[in-house]
Length: 226
Ligand SMILES: NC(=O)c1ccc[n+]([C@@H]2O[C@H](COP(=O)([O-])OP(=O)(O)OC[C@H]3O[C@@H](n4cnc5c(N)ncnc54)[C@H](OP(=O)(O)O)[C@@H]3O)[C@@H](O)[C@H]2O)c1
Image (spheres, rainbow, N blue to C red):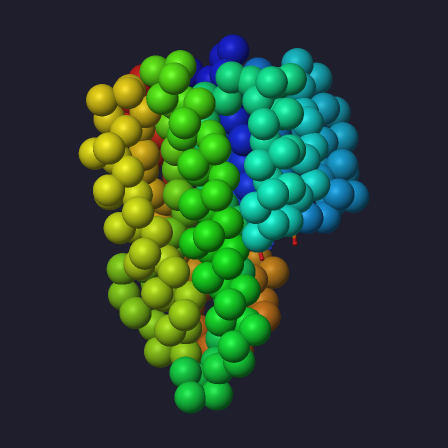
């Protein structure tokens, strides 16, 4: 299923995105484009993947996804040099926990800028090219908090609900071009994001590896070929 395919994963420097990159490498994907801000964490992951699976080609693209111009320039160049991209995994995200009444606007802006605008920016660039090649799969990483609004996570929940609406709308719009759009909806997962949160400590989290394995099983169900 993954042979001769190229995937771009955002949020690949740690947590769920990193685990998805490792899982896809183990599944025999041909090429991985890894996006996040932390260049050295991406380089370390690239080395780890190349040691584990020497046939996988890994390209790191250090990028802040809230910077639309840089995203545009880097992705246009990356598609030219390493494309076509068959699978886009929009995993980068940020969460702040706070009572709504005490919420801080810069954090609210950061959640909307990355979780929504960052996702829209990169998806538009890639989706346009996928529709031209009449092939592709886009996976938007939402959350259980995109299904059930969680007190103290109002902005985060709002962004994750929005991502599900975005996914559903795009699914219909891009289907005629043979581009599939699906959502991954993880529950609490043991990553840096969750370690920062004060609440929900009583829930036993999944591991990022478990989420990544469920992601691959889900993709296989959606289609034998993406
Ligand atoms: N952990 C959970 O319980 C849970 C549950 C459901 C859904 N999710 C979702 O799963 C996704 C991954 O979360 P995680 O738990 O793995 O979080 P994490 O460990 O905090 O990782 C977040 C990732 O996003 C990247 N990122 C943050 N800001 C960025 C920016 N401005 N530009 C580019 N990349 C940026 C980070 O890399 P850099 O810092 O290097 O940029 C990192 O790779 C998120 O969308 C999250 O909402 C998480």
